[in-house]
Image (cartoon, rainbow, N blue to C red; front, side, top):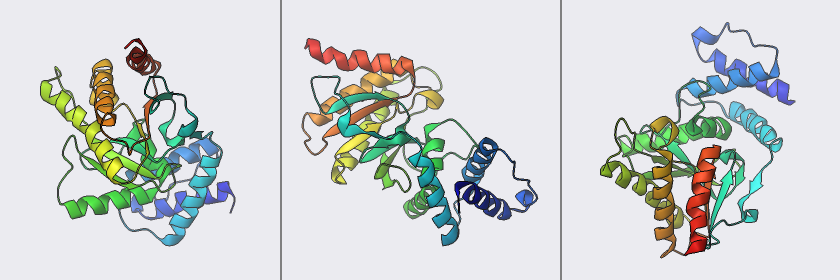
Length: 264
C-alpha cells in the first residue's frame, strides 16, 4: 500500500465501526483526508481493534513522521550554567528524546475533541490508537481518575521518543492559589521522579497547565525551572531536561529565567 491507500483504508475502517459514519464519503483532497482520519481517531472510544488495522496505521504514521524534521536533543545547546537544562521551541512530537511530557486530563485517555489543538490531542494522534488503549487499560486497573499533580508513564508507540509521561496539571478558574502552585510543582517533580525510576535519562517538558488550563505563563515557568533545578541538585540519573515551548512569549520567559543563571 502507498500512503494514500493506507489513509483511505484507515478512514474506511474507522467509519465502518459506527453506523452513523458508514455512509460518510471520503473527501478527495489529502489535507481533508488527513483531518478526517485524525478526527476519527480523536473521537474513537478505547475499544479493541484488529492487528491488521494497527499494522497499517503504524506504517502510515511512521511514514508521515519520516517527512518531519526530527530533533535529537543531544545536539541542543544549553542556555544555562547547568548543561543538563536546555530550551527548545517547536513541536514536542518531533523530539528524539527518552520521554516527553503530556499535559493530560484526569481521565488520562487523551483528548476526545476532534482536531483540537491541545498537546494531549497531538500526542495521541501521532502516537496512534494503541496509546489510548494502553491508557484506558492502565486507568481501568487503577480504578479511579488520576489525581492532579501525579504522573504515569506509557510507551510512545509511533512517536520518535521512547516514553510519554502523562501528568494532570491544576486548572485555574480564578486567582492562582498557593495550592495551585504546589500542585504544578508536584507535576514536574512527579514526572522527574518517575522518569529517573524508569531509566529515562532525557526528558522534554511542555508548558504544563498553561493554555487550556489557564495557569499564568510566567508564574508557571518560574515553578517549572525552580522545581527542575531543585531536583537536579540531588539527582544524577537525569542527564538532560528540555523546556519545550511553542509560543514566542514562552520562549522569552524561559530564556530570561534560564539565562539568569549566568549572572549568579
